[in-house]
Image (cartoon, rainbow, N blue to C red; front, side, top):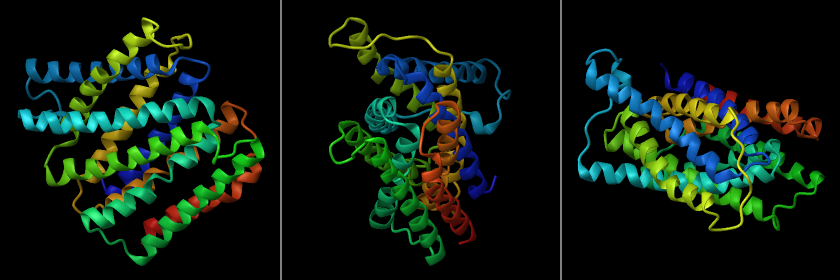
Length: 298
């Protein structure tokens, strides 16, 4: 699949993931949601590993997990640790902020990914691609300022601080993905499999602490959206990793196109969760579309 098409398809599934995340954590305990969602992902990969071991040749090459050395396992553990920190911050923020604001703020991640890609990986987008990124991200920022109409002031809202921290860690994860799938030579299935396994392990002590009431916490209610959080993210990440493995793909552009998930989350936030000020945010949403088109044309 061409890497641009893969990036856009990943954006669609990622938008569905964000909607399910909002439904799962709304008025619910966050840490058990994180744990059970990742247990579901791990279970899927355990089944695939079992099939590959008992019936060789039954799975397509894209789903085969390659054996890893001890050093390679440490690289996977580092990936999971970065994402665990990002998700903890982000899930708590999404619980307390409107999705039509939280998703655009998260979408500023490509700004930091682009900066890292230029400084660390030496990438140089074309001027038209750069213009598309700038317009897209400027629109995201304009959309985020609409939060003031809803009484959310970013400079003193602690949940915005959580969201910003999660976004920065997500940008670090995006750069690390490019290293793992490019220079380190991992395939997408191997990264997804062990990333999911280690992530579930990292969330386990937090879930135990929640269960034993080591700190004041909210009650947990099982919702089927927790399962779909896992499934949508598995598909979105698999397609995303496939895009990054293309030698022609620039991590800054893949990350920017993937932020098209904001359009799905924005529309879903208005329709499913009855969030307000949709019309006031529409110009910024159209700016997002314009920026993505320019990026593709570049």
